[in-house]
Image (cartoon, rainbow, N blue to C red; front, side, top):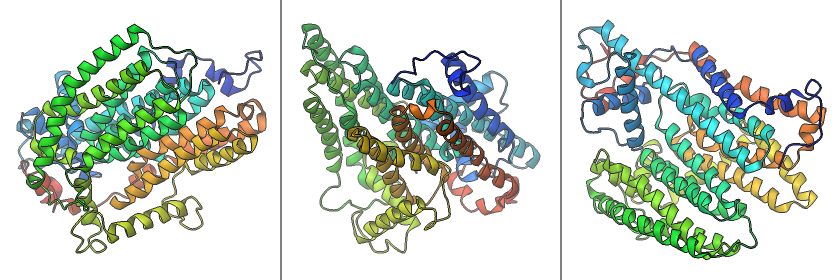
Length: 539
């Protein structure tokens, strides 16, 4: 939806409108600078052991890769992040900004001062990478929202809200595999939305291919990304558009055949890789349990079928020209196959097994956390897991009331309330499809939160859900631009944005005042980091 066309003198225009008229690149740099300043002021200089369960393990694997040693941590499985942190450490070391970039270059454990200094520099280098990644994520998000809704004001507000949502504010202050995974899959979702709302052609097909690639990369980084990825076909169906007069030219079929041939060339080795992972089920480093109902080794085909069904139904409902539908499907499959084939850059059977058997892999860690509730459950699907899921749904809905669950309230809840109220207004106006679209995005976010409760409440997981809630609110606001044109509602909206930004610093400030006892990490460090000597706080 375009900006209001009424001409207002620049000096009399509202601040938000004046800001939105600035070059988009300048606005993006402003968001990035604000995010970096926030982290540098609060949290960047914390001791290296504050978030040891991720910071130290991920930094350790950057050093392992730097020495050409194999991966040792497969919980997520984390593979994509290890590739990135290895490259980041090499870059900083080459520029003279990081003294140690390989495991063999670490100072001896007998020198506690040098050891502490080396790890502090490694973790701070990792935090600087997190600042860069969160800023890129927020900028890409805001830019794609601008392309989707067509209103720079709405896109700017959406970018700020995502940048200072609980998810990215947590991710930007530590090293976590969730950041890359969430950034990839959320960006893939937005690329699909932009693509399905454009006339058929080469550019939408390219966007869909890139989306497929990002989904594959998200999966090899953290398999939990599959939950949101499975929702993308439904979101694409809801947000699709029909374009009259789009034909099936010979050139379009030529492109479809070309992309199809490339997709087939990539799918054959990718499918072989997944087949190897399924066959290696019993060699997993963690004790897998069968899914139940004979689904182990077969649900992967159902997931692939779900994706193909989603693309087929979308093409039928929105009357997408057959040539473009074939090109788009091939592009998605090509991108997804290339993303999975990234596992061959640093081959390790355990990564392939984890990605191929993602349901069993995730259940391992759920069963560890909820050992009592899942005691004796010899398969994934069972009464214990269903009870936990229902409890997670109840907790998620209770949080939205605040009164029923006053703990762990995300500051973005005001965004969700706005989206709900806006959807109700749109429904009463007769814009029922737009209302359903906004509500579905919220439901997906809540569903993800309920699923993630199986691993316990972690603020960093909101990197998957905050962008969905913000997108829901942005979709509503873009259809009610009068709220930004009138002073009173505009002040209320801006006040809500300011509230989110201010509240984003509450937990980081608390963390700086409540430093944990690092000795509590000394039991697991030798298990996850066997190649390093004892840390100074473990003596």
